[in-house]
Image (cartoon, rainbow, N blue to C red; front, side, top):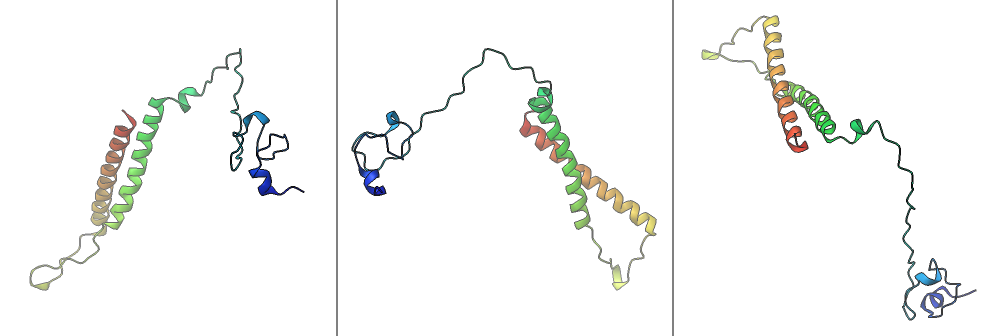
Length: 139
């Protein structure tokens, strides 16, 4: 068996070199180490035109991608608004003058005010996310 180091360092031009793809793609004689040099693969061109792609409008159209990004930005803005709206709720008890507790409003009024606040925050986030997405997508 041949010594691999001697094979790599040899400067002979025999065709038994395991480190080259073809005899004409070898590095110059006398190179210390022979690295695999391969020829570039080129796909032959066809004389027949490819068939038209009916899904191009939905897959490659910049306008469709921008509109989809804007809608998804709004959707994720709503999700973020609801998430941060729930985190920003203030559950503390309000104390009035003299250390007396302020009476709470009926539960229906509390739910209405909380829902309104949560909806406003979600709408603000949706508008902001949609605007930023539309801006960066080129609309």
